[in-house]
Length: 386
Image (tube, rainbow, N blue to C red; front, top):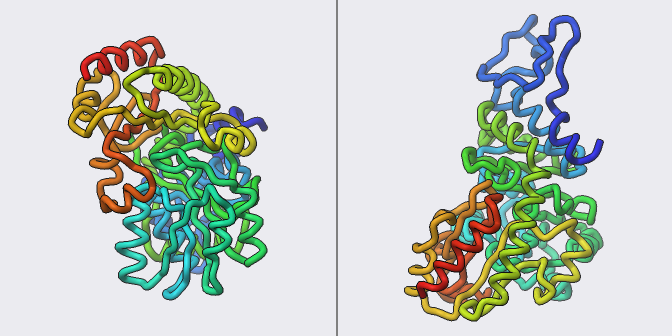
C-alpha cells in the first residue's frame, strides 16, 4: 500500500467475519477491563486497558506502518513518550549526547528531571557538525537524541551519518520527527533505532488531542519500552486514540497544503525589508538545504523568522495578526504563531537561548492550510504596522 492508502486502512480493516460487525471505523473501546473465559487466558490478549486496548492497538498498527516500522506505542503526550522511552532504556549514570537546539520541554525533562533526580548525564552539541557528535561520545554514552529539523531554528543534522557512528559504538539513536511527520521523513529508513512524535501535532492535525507515539523495528526495544509504558501508565486513552486515527487519514493531503503555503510564505518573508532572516529548509538560502533535499521528501509547514526589531515591536507585530492565532503547539489545520523566547522556550535560560541563536525577535510560525492569499495579506498588514 502507498502512504495515502495505509493512512486510511491500516488498523481499521472492517471485520466482516462471523461475530464481527463490519465497522468501517473502529469502535472506541472504553472498557477498562476485559472478562475472561478462564482464569489464565485473557480474551484475545486483552486484560486491562492500561496494558492493551483494541482502539489503541489499531492506532499503533497504523503508526508503525506509516513510519515503515514493525512496532509502535502510543502515549498520553509527546513528553510522556519521551520520558517513558528514556526510563525504559537508560539507568542512573548513563550518558546521552543530544542536539543543542531542542524543544524547550525536552530540555527541561533532560536537565530538571533526569539529570537532577536520576543522575542521567547529558551533553549538548551542534549536531549539524557530525564530527562534534562523535567527539562527545564517551564510554558511558548509551544514546544519541536528535531533532531534525529542530524546534525552533529548523537546523538539520545528517541522520544517516550519525546513526552509522552510533552503531559503530553500539549506541541507540533516537530521532524526534514531529516537525516533518512520517509523510515527509522516515528516520528508521536512514538508520535510526527509534522515532518519536508528538502526535498532538501533524499526525492528529486538528489541535484537539494531546498524544505521543514511538516507532521502532527492534523487538528488544519494543519489549523494554512497552514494559515501562505499562508500569508507568502514561497511555493514550481510547477516545484520543480514535481522534488520532481519524486525523491521520488526511495526513498526506494536509502536509501537501502545509508545505505549499509555507513555501510561498517563506519566499515572501525572505524578500521583505523588515525581515532580517528566514529559517525554512525549502529555501536555497538555508544552510542545510541540500541535506534537506537528500534526507527528506519535502520541507514541511514550519517557518521561523527574525524581524529587524526588538521584542516590543515583535510582540506588536504578532498581536496585530488576524488569521495567525498566538498559541504554542503546531501542526494543526489553522495557522499558529508564537515568540519562542517568551513562550515555548521560556524555560531555557537567557544564556542557553543565546548559545543556540534564539533571539527575542525570533518568531515561529506553524503555517496552516488556509488560502495562501489570506495569510499573505494578513502578514503584509501586520508588517506595515511596525
